[in-house]
Image 1 (cartoon, rainbow, N blue to C red):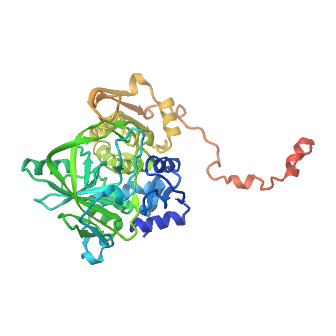
Image 2: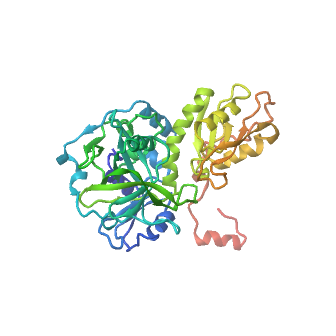
Image 3: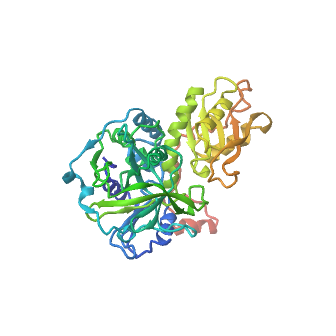
Length: 467
């Protein structure tokens, strides 16, 4: 399986010419981020020579929809159905003994210094420091013993101390429960897992679902896990690095600013603190970072949101065919929806259902099935030719939005929906798309000459007819 582990996936990328190996010495301060950003969407970047470190670093391992399709062993149209099925039917993991888990090959419990051990980058000009951006953050509900997996930005705040941005979701809920009892919450920070486990961590699920079990379903076999050394957490056994720790109760320290997915900085404020208790890693570990606001970051958040959005709209408009959280909308703010319209008003219902799915969604475009919603030129064409603001626009003011959207008033803003579907009673020729018979089947290479010799080109200058 291509995506069985982090390393088998890197082997796959290399075999496909999708891995750029950079042997030149690079600085973790901005230079790594700059090079990886230049390669964004084209190739993953593997840095073998990070200044001051023996540990290499990689970024961009899944920066296109095709990458995720390859990891799921399907095509781009099959991503959402396959992910949705795994979310609906999680499968148990397989707990390994310590000696069978590669991530246990090296264990550090004393003299911990995270920044001296791993090449953690500074990404943006105004970032407050070095940030871990691509780690699974795993906690456990002490009552149900179900684990929760998510990703949070983690600032290096000391040798064995991390500042964490915990948004008001499942991890934050578990932490507040512990804090109210004056207790810390155990956690494990896992770096360097396969793309399927990474994707599973972003699934939108009810509280109490273990995302590692979704990863098991995506792999079609139990995900191998192992118990941590100092905390009661199970982690992927073939990960590159695990940082164990506890989120301390009633302690907040400054964190940020940090460049986030909207391509603006999240502000500095007091955040929760993780006290590190142990580190384990494979022999010759590979550090992994995600460049914020790059395609990898956006798609990793966008694809699971598409699954949730599709299911939400389907409850209201059963004929919904597909949804797309577009990169131009940071895979959070813009939703494009394809429906097979059977009744007038369904497009507007789809718009309202999309807004109800996530407060992040700001603009929704609903189009007919003939519009390729993954092609933004097609979407723009549908807006240009099938939309009239006087009757096709839905506007909602003073709605909750994203606080990271700088155009809002601390998250409060307007939302707009665009009904770009064709009226059902329109005359057949009014919206009939122009076509050229035979265009789709035509092979252009059958009509192009491979002979581009200088003598052929010179014949134009001599007024001779090409033969």
